[in-house]
Image (cartoon, rainbow, N blue to C red):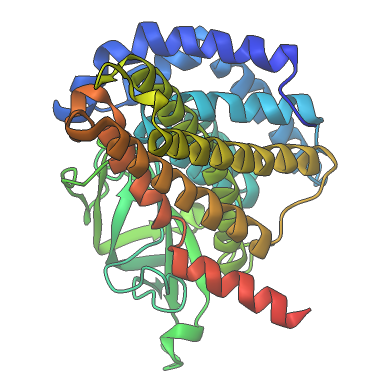
Length: 404
């Protein structure tokens, strides 16, 4: 694959129209008015028939789980590309919408659909996939960001046939408004073993449970369209029906589940980065052609041309990473953690560099929100932090290289 097909272009055009009609008019409210994104996302699901598609996908996965079948094989490059196009187009206007949507329908719902029993899938998975309910994926803690699994201190202690959960989570996307929370914690079995080595269990919590507190949205540098908060558990009592898989030893559960989600998150950052880069480049080219300085457009000056050329190089490189990911997904090839980390490391840095150069090209105008590029930079900056910092991507890549 070396370019978007006509089908892909048609999908992109439809998404752009939705963005222009339904999202851009609300950008100020998303950015400065504390407008939760879920109404807009639900309207998008209805407009494009995504809710019905989610129901059909849910039924297929449920049937396979009931029959104890392996996950369905990939459906091909066209569908893989069609999945990423909305991510790219939405990222041009609001990365926060993409983050909130991805965590709710991807991480939270995806974890339940992968690890849950059929009963758990029906009880929680369907409503998350259709966006009827909002999901959060709670892994990170105040003192265990990059060391999320080893440094985890939230615990679940057995109490007869139930568990009692205590601890806290932070930087939780959708946390303030989540109806359903997929929570990772350590098993406190009273053995006295080092907590770093204890089993990692995954539970499903519902908003309003006794002992569960969800904070108000945090004030952040960017991605204001994606509410982020803290979650506190004080003696939250849960039954085995809320333990994913209803076993402490689920296939692919605990640590393995979290690492699989890291791969999906990191690969997805490339598509988000591409959206930021393409929008920054478009805005910069238009501005360079119209901004006059000393009697001619600034696009005629070599230093401005150098900035535009470097942006285009970044766009081509990140687009090629996205195309490669689509092709390999179509062939059933799942990225290794190192490959996904390399994609994220390069694309996130490229998006931030391009957005920063766009502000420089705009000069003083780039520093105000009206011209959009300052918002794109603030939104893009967290791509180098969440789903694993730049530094952790380097560690993952290097460890894989020395093991070969």
